[in-house]
Length: 358
Image (cartoon, rainbow, N blue to C red; front, side, top):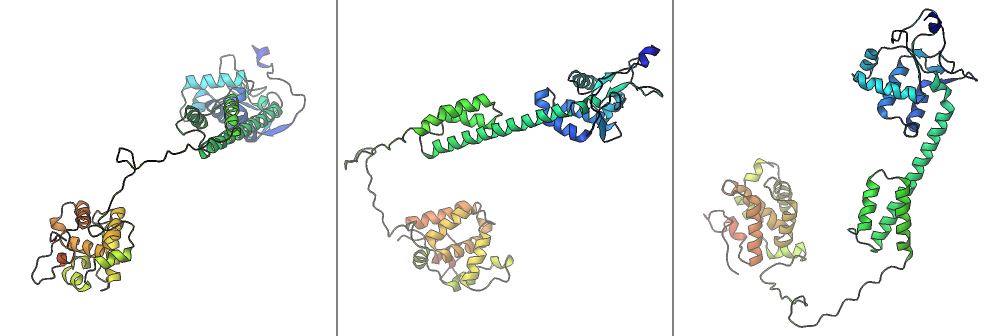
């Protein structure tokens, strides 16, 4: 046993150089897939490196020995189970990243004389050159895969742009799923070789549309006449709609006072009324598209007046958005009198239900 305790372990290095342990760990991380290491094994190696006091790892056998217990390693690894820790330590030893020499009682400890029992990290320094080569190869392979993925994505975009294949085509769906996953080089090359001939062929000619006859049958041309006196065209300018639904400003200011609770400094002009309406319609639950639709039909000023009138009657309106949409529908049907909402006659109750037939 005394003879065994004095026997050195590890491989002798022909050239004695030094290397930064953290730089070696970063290099090993890039080359890990080729070596057969995962991130958990690298975490265990990082914990072992943290027990070595110096930053530079020597290449001499037995010159970089650490001897932490499994409990200490587990605590430094945020409570990794001991069974998992032993498995990853065995992987490091099997791959030749570290060397292991236990004491006679299968423990790891330091000795006053001779090499301590524990894990020797010098093999990591001795394999630095091969690790750098493996990392360079991994970077080149990753760059090559990225170029293939970019080329395949470009080909797919060209197919969609030229309308050679529809988005729901099986080949397009296969390309989409491949680009979302971590595909190997062979799969990417096969797809590229299959897609490139499709782009080299002439683009498909658009099919000629048959001239439709004038018969009143299904799927034939449709002629619709619009009564312009009954509704307002959606494409009509806002200025024209405002002229058709003009409301006196005095009536609006005389009958609408509730908005002053929110905007006490609002100007007594159409500009101020429209500005207040732009900020109030969202508070009433009226969406912006519906509000803009009303402006296109009723006009900007009339829409603002309707919003202020609705605010006066909010306790009686359960669904303001539906109520507002109903007003627009009444206007399209030609049975809405906006001026009557503001009680032109003295003593008339303010109500949006006053409508008339045109």
